[in-house]
Image (cartoon, rainbow, N blue to C red; front, side):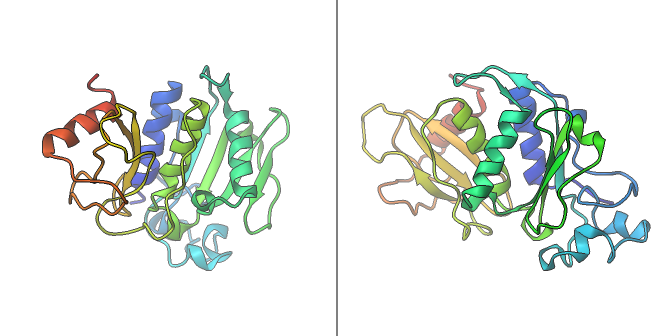
Length: 255
């Protein structure tokens, strides 16, 4: 059965936390054949007789052979306050389109965005430049889909995490390098390596087969939390207790 990838489940959780949207307003997968598309994995496409003919499989080598993972998320209407002003679907979409226009490394997984900036006209960004519009159901939500070969990339969550950081007025951060796709978790960026300053240190921690999260600590001791391997210049290993403190700070379960 088509299932939701961890990358999009993490994006859903992020938007639930930041916007108050319920899970039903952040749809990822179809549960039965419903016209094909990136919300359906190979199994549902096959049941619907579209395994090799659906546009989400035949138009790009990056979508073949595919898998049983859904590769799209619908983001329902929201509007919340932030330190940089109101944040809504329009502001999110404009930001995403700029990342694509700037060819940022963490936006290259996006195949298409179906959206409306004015609530009246539906438009589509299509990386393959095949389509420009969409049906009127997209007046109520934005649709963001991934090429099927990239759905488990840390970029998927990383891009949306970077969006909310910027909305919070936090310092700009670097996208995850494209080479960080599989294997054990690693640190790929942190803001400072100076010790004993009390200055927050930001690190991007993740792996191709697991979640990617921005975490903050007031210690400059930054390292990966599982294998404890350090690759960033100036970083050192954390003790188990320090890692727990770091993750609690990220999840908001501790002061």
